[in-house]
Length: 215
Image (tube, rainbow, N blue to C red; front, side, top):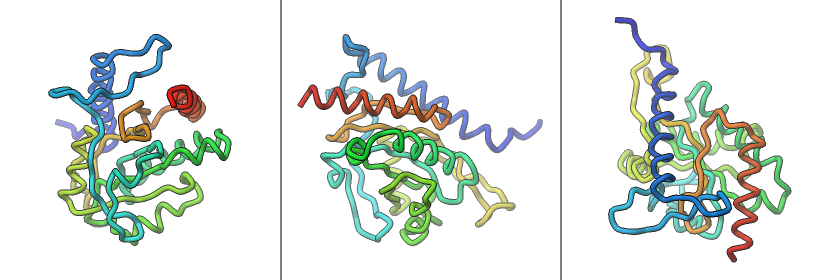
């Protein structure tokens, strides 16, 4: 039996995650104007997002509560990722660059590592500082248990895959999605790493317009 290509596993994981998120949106329904309704926190309902406690690139402990008041754009990845992760963050940077300064300031981009063994705060600090990535991108890591809890909250799949040709002898298979969460940490939308930057930017503008009407 032939081995599956290395790139196939994260793609399949992303497709499965998209199916799960799509099912959530169908169950939740949509508003009359075509926009997604905010998550309803009712007993027994499947949700995307939730509480987390992690460590940022400065070594400080942070929780989801630290980001309340700002919409979050969350990507789960890892710094040793050779292609999909940096590409996804570049797509996000491109999308945000299409907003004006005031609009951009209302979004906090976050990279949550799925490889806490290698992604220490020091490694993340150097990585998120890349000019190719979004401005103000924060990197979050933690203990394996803390990272696992955050991944479960966002329905993110990840797994270690042995690869002797890579640094440390392994890589990480993982879901590759960008999550848009509202100012209270509730799920709004999700974008695959193949999304067009203008499509993402348009959705972010729509979110801000809906948010302004609701306030």
